[in-house]
Amino acid sequence: MFHEKTPQLLKIIEQLKSILDLCYVFESKLRSHEEVQPILVIIHKSKDTDTRHKDEIISKINPIFKTNPSYTYIIYTLEYALTSIKECNLFFIQHCNKENIIYHSKGAKLEDIEVEVSRKTFGLISQQIEDELKSCFHHFDAATLHTENMHFGKALVSIYLYQSSLLHIAAKFYLGEEFEEDSISELLDRLLSFDKSMNTAYDIHSEKDRRLLKILDKLPEYSLSVPKTITEEEAKELLTKASNTLVAAKELLRSQLKAAILNYEKQDKSKSKSVKKTNKEYRKIREDLQNLVNRRTMDLRPGHHKTYYKAAFKIEGAADILYHISGMLKVCVMALENEHTNQFPNPNLNIQTTLEHILQLLPFEEVECLERIIKELEITTEDYVLEPPVHAYF
Image 1 (cartoon, rainbow, N blue to C red):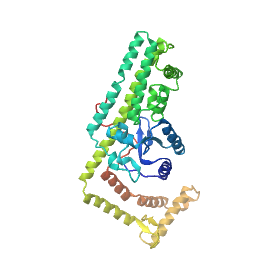
Image 2 (image 1 turned 90 degrees about the horizontal axis):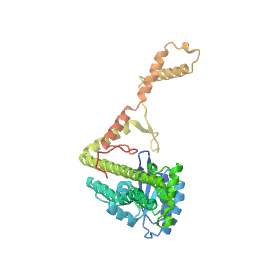
Image 3 (image 1 turned 90 degrees about the vertical axis):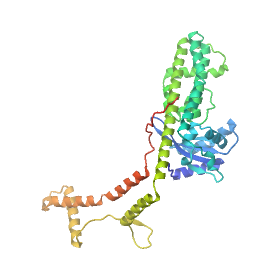
Image 4 (image 1 turned 45 degrees about the horizontal axis):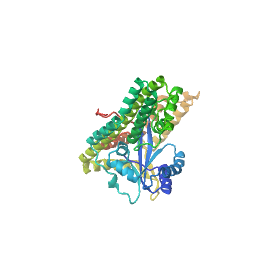
């Protein structure tokens, strides 16, 4: 992946360097079924992981991105990022690779972020996610049992623990780290700020769903003691919502795993193809392109810093130039629907001459050369995700 550092990105990096001991900045894309969202992954060298220190850093960084709304960001310490890369966390494997680097400090060791990725790696990641999800299923089973036994307060505690665990797991693999928030509403808001698909678990615009979230969010006030104010109907509704949360979390992580696999397969294919291409073949492409440039460009005058692109007309001589110019002027007069256009004896001939000139200006050679370059270099779009081959996902 080629990243051109735009003036906007260069300005963001300079502002970040003034705030942080910046180590890496990666430019990547968070992909969902509905959109592709540019994201900057910021890695800094601070070892202070205190919540208050994190909040101070974020309060300084937020204004930078408020003035650059086309990007969102996520920030990690170098120590945490390197550990997560070695553990093959899906987020870091997907976004924090050498191809995505747009900044690294002079002392950065690029080999530290290199991890050998293979098709087996994604099988291991899939198993990690499945194991994490299974680790909280007992909370759902307990909630179901408590509801059947009419112990709705206990059911609420289990539902809270289950949904909280699911959202933390989704954040861990989708955004690289579990959130620090406790309330279900806050956890959902954080995920929704990066991907709207989690809205399928709870509709924040629904009064009924907001009421259910309010019930869950009050639970930490009891310090996980058993609350009394919950009905059988509310318990069953919350069980349904808990089930929906699992479906939404699975779909979110599944789509990211597919995107990571597709990106790996594209890069792997590109590498294998590049090995097969010989220097001789690439030299031939360059020579053809150079010959085209030589034929089509010219200097205004010797030593002048500007060059111009040549467009050729086929003419038989100096008098023929006047004939062609006259023909084009006549076509312009006819286009104005002048009532005296019948003064031109052969209007069809004038129109034909003008159209022939237009045809001569069409850049057939340039387009053919561009198509060859695209084919040889296997350049493809990155603005959408194609479905990769079917894999066994959690």
